[in-house]
Image (tube, rainbow, N blue to C red; front, side, top):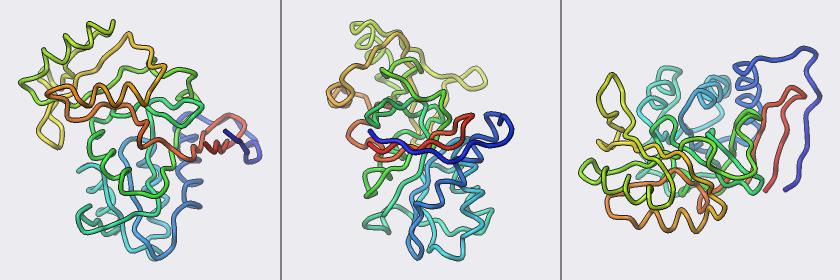
Length: 235
């Protein structure tokens, strides 16, 4: 991993301002004349706002969620279906956690399956996050797993055998339903020391649609918002 850093801001920035800063910094990775892959979440919303300032320089975007699609379209950015696009030069998205090798935990916004699909279409994954998301070992943030509803208790039991505690994510007192019509199980108590092997194993469990470990589709670049400015991590 190599690092570089922009000059420090003159004032201490809030977390929201750090998100704005990394969202704007991500514009340097957008290739003019092409379609950009766009993720989901509060940090990505800042990137979408920044992307709108150069929307005439790109063909459009492939989005990883209905929420991001609506925001992009509201700002006048054309959204393509992923099946219409063979390859994307870059995918820009946030992370709930990222380690020193570019492995991530994602899915806090319940869009992990579509995020992994768009990431797999892209030549480069640029992660945008604040420095609270940088960890030594994945597992501090609850691990999101998208699961077919009939398999939830079985998947929870399999995580229990690994020392994890799984709970179905709720919204308004009922199980949250993803854009794909599935449930999310959030798992705590894990230390994911081998992300690649962990992702490969859990992805094979019956009923698991997507596990929120991104090791096969890890980030090549992370733009990290810090009180000293934007730190660029290259993996």
